[in-house]
Image (cartoon, rainbow, N blue to C red; front, side):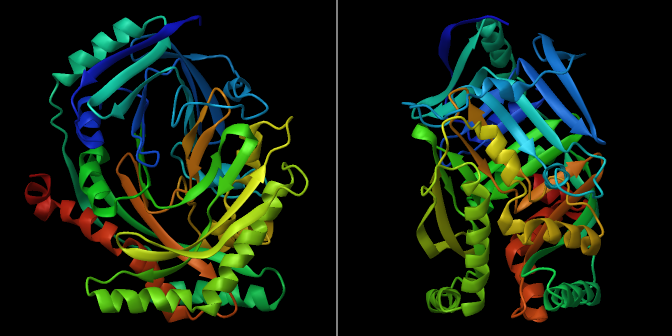
Length: 450
């Protein structure tokens, strides 16, 4: 498809992202990324591909919000082999979407997978970006004016979406089942199979209606720097993630910020500081963090210029709404002939949510967790056509497919881990999300939706 000069026009005033998404809820696919304070909504993709039940299907636009299945096409070929200099910040046209944990892990091991979409990549030349005086529509598509007019019509549509849980979201494992899996992990560590396993558990429920209805409440609750939302057909993915996976910067620079180490926040400043100091002083969390730093350094070194992989920050403490996290930074410079998308796929799933060594860790995860993770612990983000981009780690995220809804939480298990502390850490991470989600149960639907 040929492209015209960039069309730019103000669409509306400063609606919150969730408010605007409610107006645009009929767009399919629909993709929103908070992108570290630069909210952007991808719309009217020229083409997109989706993986479901191990089958990759391709679609192309034949009208406004109308698509037909098409022949296979490598959308990633549009991303160049090097991140060139870019004067723009944030998304400026390119690929947007998500890659689930199951799809990433399947590159290396055989594993179970959910029946929901495992990957969505959409080529978006049209997008909305929130600026100081409102939302602006950008497009170099030849249908830009028609797309803008269509969006204006949608603004006058007040979505009357409903959402409620018909079955509360609860832990699939009992404490005893978690404990059994925990001790099996430590048995594997003692046997020399691994050094660390990121053991997670699923909280499952049933829901009717559109998960998008809850987005405003969840984003206000978490204030997550890597929030996002994707809908494709009957699948919805709501990210409240605090974790960056890889940022692809100009001049072929890479940044990754693995999180390992968590302590809860408290409203009492003294208790909160004590909790933070406990994390700072934790030898166990430092050991866990440095294992993942080493794993990511190894992952990136395959594609990086010799000697460019650095660790400028180690064991930093970053405080989020519900928890304190121990966060490190790894940087690198890509070789000139390397495609950024290849780096992303090679590094998935992220080391912070698998373990070390990674392949054996993923095999143990598949054995012990029993249920596929789906999108959880995968990645949501974008690539601009100049090769720059940003991808998160999909933790603190909610998946809904048809009537099934799930939230996951977990942590890194080492030989020094204690089962009660690790079990509690799961709840420290998602208790606030679960409490909010469960207000949308049948008995509270009216109250929650008001």
